Length: 285
Image (cartoon, rainbow, N blue to C red; front, top):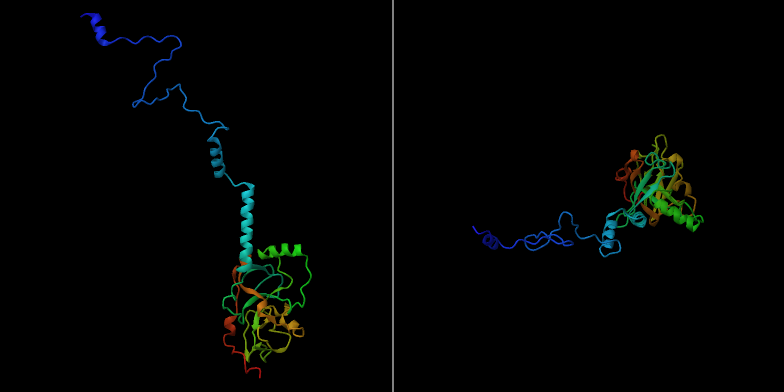
């Protein structure tokens, strides 16, 4: 066979590369170039190039909150707690033993501020927190505005004691009731009906002070459960107002003991114990 003819049919051989020329590139199907093993892909943008800032911001958004964010969340939580405390439910630190054994010194009770705002009425046997200004305290003591603000905020979340004019007692008589102490059996009588009081401190008499009073309309006659260690309506019978607490001075009804956890319980009310007391009228002639 003619070798020249064979070479002509096979086509010319590629010329060898000259110095400085690159070798042939590999071509992917479809015409797109694919970098070889010794070639690098497109470089990442530098810190000053577009695209770098966006990635840094995205990384920062996924990272931990800054101190400003933590501060903002803290302020929001405090504001929410103060709003709830002011309008709905407030922790109240028990400062004395006047309500033992129901409430002990250091207990923190949750006071329901909505209990009497939407048609509810204060009833005999309820344990209530009230402002004693004008009944137990004739004039509120002077206070420093800054100190009062700080203490009020701390008291609102249960970290400080209540105001000097705030008290917690049990309602024994409501407007129109005749309350007498004591019957021949040594019990308190309301509208001619003797009342059993199992919540009274064991060993205490229902009252060592004798009285016979009629509760004016719109007011309450209140006593502590620890009758021998409670300054209550009995101690102010001769004061202006006769120791009666205006209903509009009631802050709320004590519902639960929230702290310490070992004391967690609902506050034992006594409405059922007064259920058979007749309505006011006629009993006090």
